[in-house]
Length: 254
Image 1 (cartoon, rainbow, N blue to C red):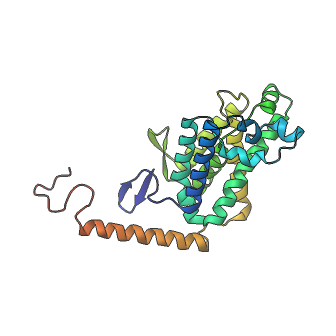
Image 2 (tube, one colour; image 1 turned 180 degrees about the horizontal axis):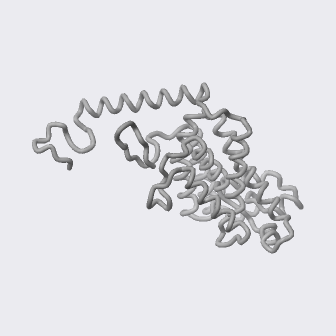
Image 3 (tube, helix red, strand yellow; image 1 turned 45 degrees about the vertical axis):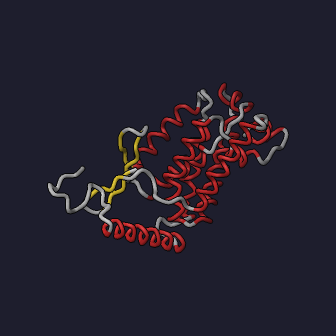
């Protein structure tokens, strides 16, 4: 993720520190993955999101618990990486309480969108009705939508290859989720992805949170900027600036 600071570009891969809620979510997801993988794979049937089970057997906890289950190591790694890269900055902006509220609103909203889509009179609806959905992707897509609304021109690496402004990045992944939502396959819950984007957009645009720094978010942001400035001064004192010391004889960057 690239950040612009004045006349030069400071290239960094994600934030420098992990915020409290993001750390707690990552550890909870990792612990749930290990328990499910090692001890009880059958827990997916109980805690994963299956519309038929929610509506017929009243497993009303599934729209929440499915967020903490993942089907493979690659699945949880990519979700936790995105949570870290975008969630930390949003938590600093909003504060922990609102961040967690938004995370679960978009995650549960994605689950409800999946349940609603499973009731549609279409071929994919019948399949979705009896197919378990797991993963934090609904809430993750909600975070991506929020990031695009707050930082529309911030570059995001599309497929980790080339930079795209955040607003266009979200438009692209939203279009992909919409096109794929009618043909779910490969274990990817495209309807949950689309639901997370839509719920996140509606929740923020309805005025639940002004597009300005709140009191808690402002305090956290100022603290972060102060710590970053302090670290930059320490690097200068110990000649640890990127590109070598300022006293290099030939002035080359190496």
